[in-house]
Image (cartoon, chains in turn cyan, orange):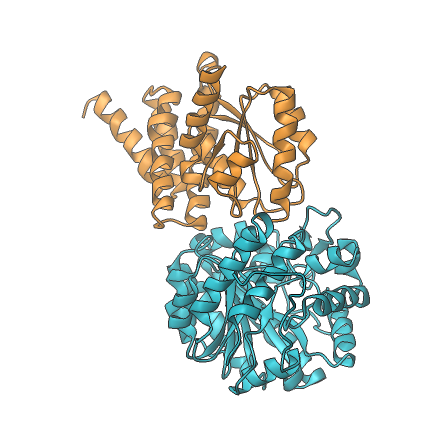
Length: 362
Length: 221
């Protein structure tokens, strides 16, 4: 580590975050590796805001995220809400976090409680369903501030789990596959409809289409179930969303996914897409499997960012940079999953310092 | 086939039906075991629990995943419902007991429920507090039940911060209570630093790790 001293400061960047990301997505040279801290609830805590407000009030949420963005000078697209997507939108109930030990929204009641409920399940009116009006309000403020807007569209398996409860969905994979497929069908159509709503409102150049895949991981389902129940709907979702004009899909390939990677590789993501990985997938492997079609994002373990020293975080960040920086479509240094809300600020900054020392393209 | 052979066949069948998550079969064999005069405690231990032990191993080796494990547990529980009313009272008195829950701030229950299944399969009495459980509730439930073990889990880096507080509350009340922890953001080193007596990386090793920790704590007192 280059020793810090009293007159030490970061090298001034040659590009703004928007210029940097635009260049990266266009395959043009960039000044340095971009930084995605994966900061959500962390922003509320940094801004002294309650998590309840952060997850309920779009204007407050944007304000907290903007302060954190300026503070860390990061390149990440800001995002409203998080967790349990699909549950409220399909008629269930959710609740915001009420304690600083919580991280995100949680489901109070899943819209599907029985097999009969699946028969009654319908695609909701996208304009008014659940969290969508608030997310749209957030994105309109974001757009007015000259920022790219972000919206979640999946994964279908994640949304289906939020609709039925992951326990119930898991049992149906083996015992009632027809029911599982019906919920996955609706979850996929929902994702496409949300993407269309955003693309129609803001235009393809201003929308960051996202999905997160924690329950698609092998910490929950087998590679076989990923192949049979997750992958076909992912393929359809990606094809249809890109067909609507989306420039790329940002996939957070969360958790243990090593055995699923050959199928992830078959998906279209845009040219390039963006694929982010949990710490369970080594960056070298990520680049090998998806680096020719996606910008690779990763992947300092969140636990380390929370519990270890800034020097340890710096060292892990250096390792990630060395493995990923020369990826064919580029690399973004990031936390492997959402930044722990109470992560020490110096630990987050240590990632930025590692980029300053090892992330420049000379 | 004599009655001993028939009994052995039934026990093997129970284990195999659990592994095959065949609920109808486990119930049918549980009823058959009662008719054959097999001690229900033996049917549970050498049939159902043995089957769940195999399931735990299949989970450890990534042949089974959460869906399979949940259905195996359903098959086991359906048979337990048949057998439990016939267990002799003195046999029940020998069971280990554990209070279990997901710590405050965390609503994720799958991991905790899988560990609960493994305790139940091994014949433990389980007092399940559910998810988002406050430190005081763990302590109060342990005092109420007299359980020798308190086990807690978390999935989030946020809620893992609650674990040292829970352990502190339990140990302040009785330092001889064995505390087990587990969950995605933890590791053994961190578990020990938090003051836990034991750590299990997955549900498959939870019972074994708990017994090791329990013996260590008991041996030290």
